[in-house]
Image (tube, one colour):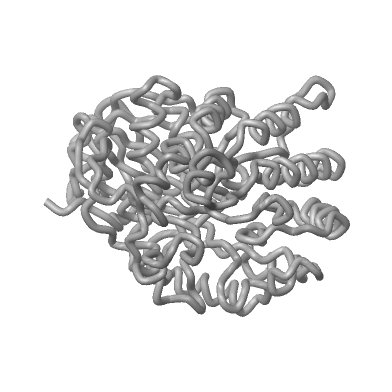
Amino acid sequence: MIWIRNTRLIDPATKTDEICDLLIEDGKIAEISKEISAEKTEDVCIIDGTGMITAPGLIDVHVHFRDPGLTYKEDILTGAAAAKRGGFTSVVCMANTVPAADHEETIRYVAEKGKQTGIHIYQAGAVTSGMKGKERTNMPLLKSAGAPGFTDDGVPIMDEALVREAMEEAVRLDVPLSFHEENPAYIQQSGINSGSVSAGLGLGGADRMAEISLVERDLSLALETGAAINIQHISSAEAVDLVRRAKRADVSGKRRENIHAEATPHHFTLNESAVIQKGTLAKMNPPLRSEEDRLAVIDGLKDGTIDLIATDHAPHSTEEKSRAFTEAPSGIIGLETALSLAIMSLVRPGYLTMADVIKCMSWNPAKLYHFDAGCIQTGRPADVVIFDPDEKWVYEKSVSKSENSPFLGQEMTGKVKYTICGGIVVYQEDK
């Protein structure tokens, strides 16, 4: 048993925010009360939660663990170690492995290896064979193998008829589709916004229309088909507004429930000027955009237009990120810093409450993927994060295989102290 004493429990699913005790037994939440009676607590691990927040274990719907195929960058075990350090108890891996997750063997491989990690590792299926955008995968077969949803993340699907067909199948299977929205017709140089910074560096950049054009198309198709979709790593003010309007589209006076969008911590924390300071460590797809775009993403989080916070954890080797900007791969790691950045960039300035952030990082992702997670209620799985929202720490070294983060060496606020999954402590801060 685990007894968490005198903690601030925040559970957005039940709108709970109070000081209380929690008792965990046999992998479940056994009791939540103002004071748990002593006779129930023999042979128990006691955690003093004074000054700490206890919340549902975080859920990341967008990670790249590079396994199988690219394990020099990351593998399932090291990716899970980073997730646990960041307070995550569930993650959804993207399909751009080698080979792509377009056959049930890859889905099952990830699931089996994931059992060694102590947390929930899910493998999304590819929408198209080989992620080539030409032919749809056998989505029912991949779902039966364990895929909770589908995505070609990293590659936009340009065939509109194929996207519609995939959405119709997703409705039949009751699974979400996640979309990487970057039309290559508007991109001269990936990883950097087309603007003053790219012009100063002599790079063409990625125009905002790359995102806008595909977001507009896919929202229209989702409204038509009723498919549950997630607009991934949204970066532009116009795309945020398109999602806002789609969510408000009249459906017998009800808000559209099938439209979702995610924001990454780097898109609500940094703008395109970070490229000047951090070089390839600030290169990602879609790129960091203007300060106005960053604030628009925050506005989207504030009003619920953007209902998910996801890291897009994308490890690359030091050698790869040391190449010239035009040759280096896009992407940064983010699992270990996501909660701190949300506290620093969203909660501390007063944009969102702590409950809002936790909702975007636990309850909303759980609902999207139909996971039995994201809440703290008696009888439910004991997937829990305990963190000090005020503790300062320096992000000196990653436990990931890669260290491609623009935040390395930076002082952070908000420190994960324990990650508990299935009633087992899978991470505890080093003393």
